[in-house]
Image (tube, rainbow, N blue to C red; front, side, top):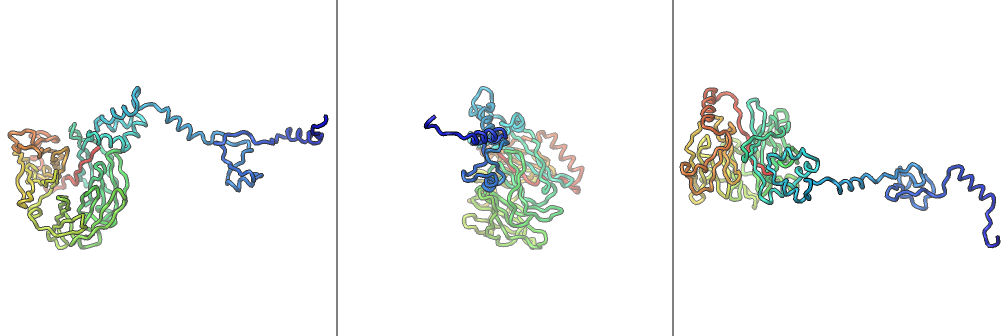
Amino acid sequence: MEGLPQVSPNANAETQTQTHRGFRLQAPLVDSVSCYCKVDAGLKTVAGARKFVPGSKICIQPDINPRAHKTKNSRRERSRVQPPLLPGLPDDLAIACLIRVPRLEHRKLRLVCKRWHRLLSGNFYYSLRKNIGIAEEWVYVMKRERDGKVSWHAFDPTYQLWQPLPPVPVEYSEAKGFGCAVLSSCHLFLFGGEDPLRGSMRRVVYYSARTNKWHPAPSMLRRRHCFGCCVIDNCLYVAGGECEGIQRALRSAEVYDPNKNRWNLIADMSSGMVPLIGVVYNGKWYLKGRGSHHQVLSEAYDRESNTWSPVNDGMVASWRNPSTTMNDQLYSIDCRDGCKLRVYDDETESWKKFIDSKLHLGSSRALEAAALVPLNGKLCIIRNNMSISLVDVSSPDKQVESNPNLWENIAGKGHLRTLVTNLWSSIAGRSGLKSHILHCQVLQA
């Protein structure tokens, strides 16, 4: 027919031959999301395509994987259709219910399912508990046992139960002279100290009350043990102490900022000191200890001016350990077994008697008051035998006889048990190595 192009017989034969051989003139249709080749139109050969994208294959290869990118999409789809936290409730209402579960049961909640485990392992869950005022405070006690090992325990004051904890990191299982402090109300830090094998350490680790696990942290700038430490504005301060191989006490000091996650040096102390007692009061950090020649030294650090200055007022003259501050007041134990409390008066620059429990427990090492910490608006006294007393210092009635709730024993209750403990301790004698408390802190979750 006229006007129609004529197809030569040779062209038809060539086309049929290529069809029989299995060649395709057009690349197979593939999903653009699944295609890895990204071959430029100017690259006509397989070799050229591989130069463009190393290890890739052009689209006309028959073994291309059409499901290459479906893994992420399938995960997204599963996340959209994942089961609710609580059947029949939207997640926001389910979270409102779960945050009200007592802290005692949180370990069990993490075992229910993966979603609950992720929820209770993050900061969002505990920040909600803190914002609505239902976060619970537990007492964490670190103790050296008779065999020299370091153990630790957590006490729930609401249900008056001791709770199990993960073991202390190996480097601190037998360490001496290490520091202990709390940042962000839920992270307990262990730092420095002297290891029997490694000597003085710079190591830092912390335990999270929210995840119930230990985590590493940046090491200190200087090896030290038997030093002083405190927390001011959620920053950890360390000063003085000793270092293996150095005969004199250290003067250096440093600070750890958790927001920057690093240590920085601060001004050196006026003289080297091994602090024995320390407290933050009226915005200053007070330290009292022994110098290189075993003389008694007292210094105060001002964070605003980054300076140290000697202190010789009435506060440090009769200062006893343990002591703590609460509601801008400085409190201290007034007897060995912690049955009396005293408070510091700024006006007269002297210590005054505050509360007397009228119950003397004894003078043995087991009944010695080892720590004094604030707990739920009250003062908490912890003794070496793990007995705990709560004192309501805010009560206007300071007489135990007329106010039974003023002084309360919440752990190791029972006068008979106290008498037996005191008698046994006296019979056993004081020459042997006794277990005693090293540190005591309060964590919130």
